[in-house]
Structures are given as structure tokens and as C-alpha cells.
Length: 113
Image (cartoon, rainbow, N blue to C red; front, top):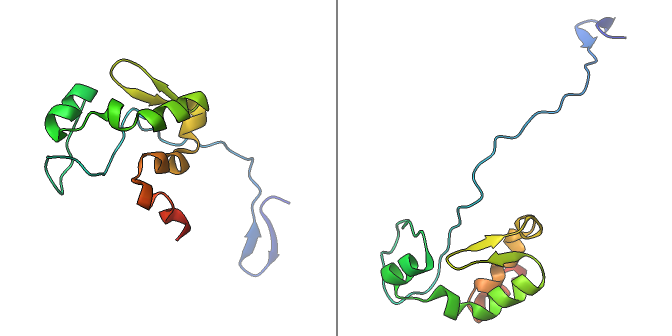
């Protein structure tokens, strides 16, 4: 049937299915918005470690989010190490839902509003 003329100006062309790749981006980049003791407002700031974040914003991430990190690690979504937090594949697949763990308590149900 490929290329067969069925009526005026209508042509059906059958093609083999193709798998197209999706351009990838590094997944080791994360963004965060929240309350801190200090730091710039309205601009992105590169932080490469927990210490770097604490120096720039005055917040110890490991202490502030210890409960959330522990909960996500126990559920198999997160892999913390000495200087970073890494989502496992299972966590990456639902990162939008998991980020609510790090919101202030009064904002955790915002997605249901």
C-alpha cells in the first residue's frame, strides 16, 4: 500500500518504526529553593559540596534534612555519601514527588491545593 494514490492529493506512506534517541543531560545537577540564614536572592549559586553550601548559605544540609535523607535512603531512593546526595534510578523516576520531603512542613501539601 506504500505510496498508493487513494484519492486526489491523499497519499499513504508506510514507514518502518524508528527509535529516536533523546538528547541527554547530566543528572548530577540539582536545584533547590528554600529558607536560609544568608545568601543571594534571585540568582543561581553553584555549590559543589555540603561545606560549600554551608559557607554560602549558613545551613548545614545534613543536619537540617537528616530525617528526610534517612527516610529516602531507607526506601531505596537516595544514596548519600560523605559530600553529596545522589538519587538512585528509582528516585530519579519520581524526583518530583520526592522533593516534597525537603519542603517546609506547611508547604508539603501544596501539590494537593
